[in-house]
Length: 240
Image 1 (spheres, one colour):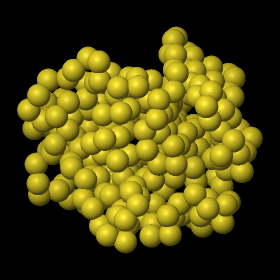
Image 2 (cartoon, rainbow, N blue to C red):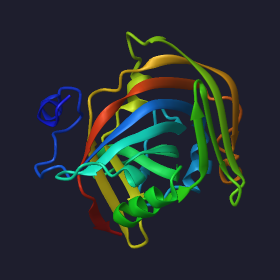
Image 3 (cartoon, helix red, strand yellow):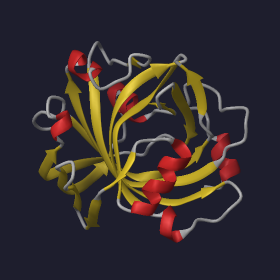
Image 4 (spheres, rainbow, N blue to C red):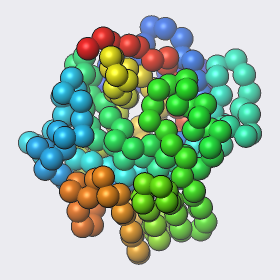
């Protein structure tokens, strides 16, 4: 889908597109979503007090999302292969700020050191480098320094024809909220509604010691998506 067509596909959004021009294009492809319902009080230990934890029917959620970043580029430049393509794993929760429902990243890992350095420098998002491998039905990630490990053996199933309210609540998020010392940074993004499929997790290892009181047992819900094309706007800083 061309960018001008993407900008016209807005009926699914909870608020209007920003008035400013978008600054970055990227693709979030072959995405594996795994969702845990978590204890709200435990989650508060990991989320800045300036952000409100968003709840679904009085329950907090944390998700592990593994996917492949492709074709990242500024608005008027082509992608640059050493930076623009990499695998990513993020651990995110759901927040509200400025009356917008968004996501907050507890952890962000990328498979290229240079991509992580550039992304962190531009965005102030908490990127760090981890070794990753992706093959047919397999996704692996490991960070020896933090003792963080992820292994997913999976099979993709049929298209989800009718999404539940919870499916949409967990996936349709068009803002990122991140703390950076003296401010909360807000980023707005736009894409079509995620096309999701069923996914069977044949084998799963999720070991993140820092979040071992959140990522307990098997995920309650999981999704797969072939991906979306994404337009992203520049960060807005709000002093705290």
